[in-house]
Length: 226
Ligand SMILES: [Zn+2]
Ligand SMILES: [Zn+2]
Ligand SMILES: [Zn+2]
Image 1: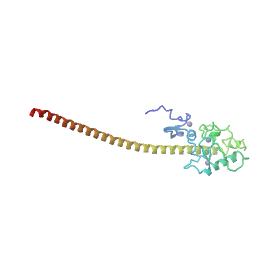
Image 2 (image 1 turned 135 degrees about the vertical axis):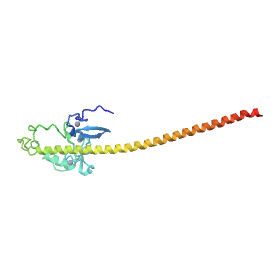
Image 3 (image 1 turned 90 degrees about the vertical axis):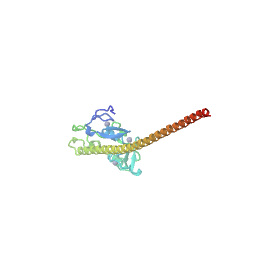
Image 4 (image 1 turned 45 degrees about the horizontal axis):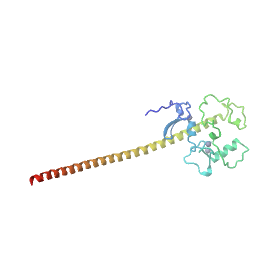
């Protein structure tokens, strides 16, 4: 059963070439896939908070969560509050009522960027976006380390989701195998019963035929003897 799959180092979702260590094995829509971190997260919205990248064991209770207006993504209410107050200092710190997750806000948004091997000297730092000092090169900026932590969090979230997905797939495969084994046993039993039935009918037919030929022979003899 060989499927035409792209080379092991490319994501089955977006096709991006990645070191295969960074690809996650997932069971997605009944197929085994190798997804990049970004595709794992984009295809499993609702399983993690898109702001703090906590993976949910259980979805947070309604009063502690906010659902994206456009997709199934669920964020911690507290994370959305924190994010809106830091990005827009004029925003009231009251509970927000609507929320759009980062990929829905920006279609080009990527949770995880791998091509950051080159020092991001030209990129503005987070501080710059927030109106803070811009002059510090990202490499030496105190928050260049924070970006690494962020990426690590994203990677861990994707890995946890992928692991959970594979565990679920394994459990499903086990249940499926047990079901098939039961079906096979039942089919075997039915086949045996059918064979026994056929044998019974054949035997009965033979008996009936034997009886009728005996009878005919008997009747054939009768007039002769009389
Ligand atoms: Zn991808
Ligand atoms: Zn959160
Ligand atoms: Zn969304």
